[in-house]
Length: 75
Image (cartoon, rainbow, N blue to C red; front, side, top):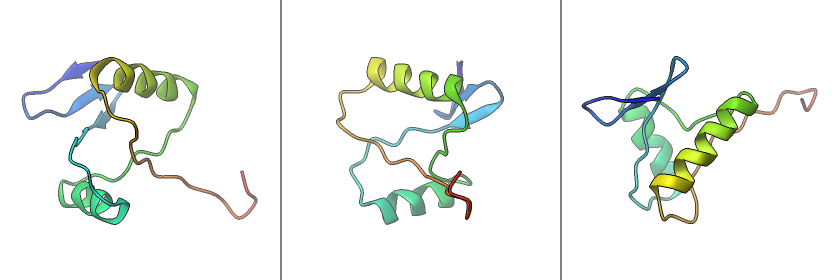
């Protein structure tokens, strides 16, 4: 992964920004959208492992919000 000057992290063509402010979920999503993003939706095992390792190594925070998608077929 690469950390850009503005704090965004690039990993496998995906961009991540970790805001460490404690916010309710609605405000967290609003923060993301105001900065041209959204809450992360984990789309595979390698992304899950990257996020898990990065958060465990860099932060002493008990929780993060992520976005979840559920199709009508529940997959």
